[in-house]
View 1 (cartoon, one colour):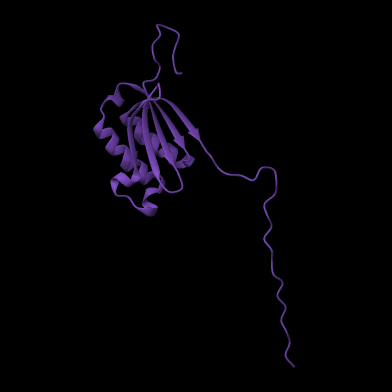
View 2 (tube, rainbow, N blue to C red):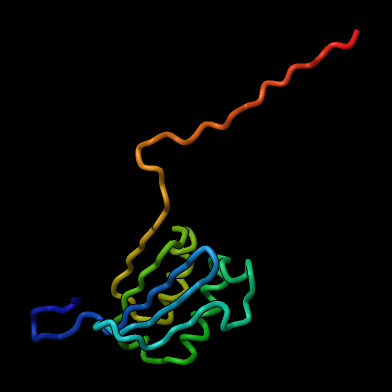
Length: 134
């Protein structure tokens, strides 16, 4: 997957997936082969309803706990994958992460539903007429 051909050394050791769905915030840590190491969701930290989907706040809360638990991110090279995260918030989160981990690769995925080439459905406007009373 992520290998160099010189001395058969691995370029990356771990992959951190930060996934924002419409209802929850999830963070997975896998090794390069895809074996899961850690999994956190916003519900594990007693965040409820809208708090779970607040973009930077929920992610920072989860990452804080993850980085306290594992110290090996400072020395091992890591890839960070963002799913459905706004670009502004991405740069903010990555700036905070950069101090704590040794990130070699950042990939951003935006899965936005769209209607293809077709125009949006037009809103119907009701024409209201006033009736005159005699």
